[in-house]
Image (cartoon, rainbow, N blue to C red; front, top):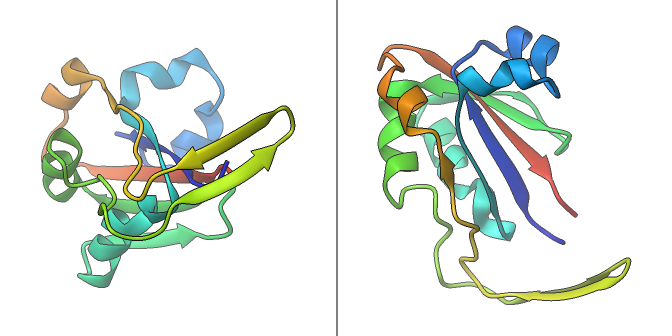
Length: 132
């Protein structure tokens, strides 16, 4: 599949690295979702506006930090949804064929209790894993 898997943490990056893959991250995950090729647009727009910092690239993962005040309204609304214009994506992975329309995005898993408890001045870690 071509696209991205996002996870937004209310943790600094060095703590995410220590906890990744463990159930211990659950209290710190604010949201997770999959998106197609245009899935990075929202976080790249924050970076371009000076509201996010990219710490890693290459897709394994792309990592950003940004303030909760800038990210939470986007993940609670349609601010992370890729735009609907663009091209269809077709592909074949082992045992699977797929076609994704422009603007495809899986349903976000919002952890509303964690979002509610997150201070707006918290620095969040945003991981975007390349799914290709």
